[in-house]
Length: 222
Image (tube, rainbow, N blue to C red; front, side, top):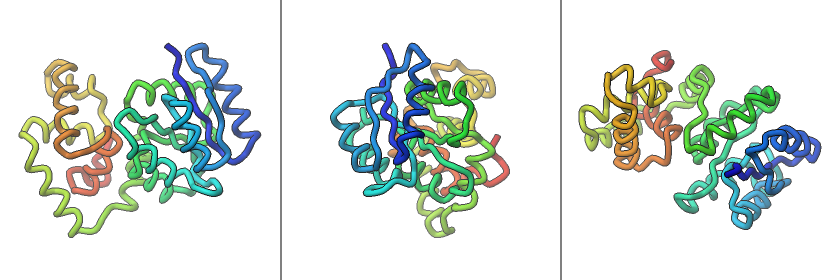
């Protein structure tokens, strides 16, 4: 089955460029385009894409607000891959908190864009550890909020906390399985349970929670 993609950007030439790259992949189908955040939300509801390439700065409704609406709509809502440029770390952070499954720079090579779409479509997170560390560490929450979040970790078992710490450092299920000497299926089960207990949508939300609760400190990731 092909991956259905919606491209949301306020520049027509940018949308056309992304469409050309995406349509070169036989397993990707561009089902529509949107020129602003409100149109992105409306078109997503009408077209049911698997992945949305979402620009952050758009008129009417920005990409962060649009992502928040879509991520909170339903469990089977489309995955959002945020497109950004250098110097927008605060916006990237807010987009991830809003429910985006990852982010890419707009000038990313075509092969990386295609790979990213497939990664996100599978339900995985797309996080560059170095970039994520700098973004999240810069906007980490205050100590009082951190203590409140950390209290929620009491709901996790000892093994789940161990797995969570490794997820937060950016490790994949396969890497965690090797580290803990267990099967990848076991890791997948632990990850699913801990995300459910912490009421987190996916691994991206998990990484953010880990930083904000103090599970991971700047410099530990990777």
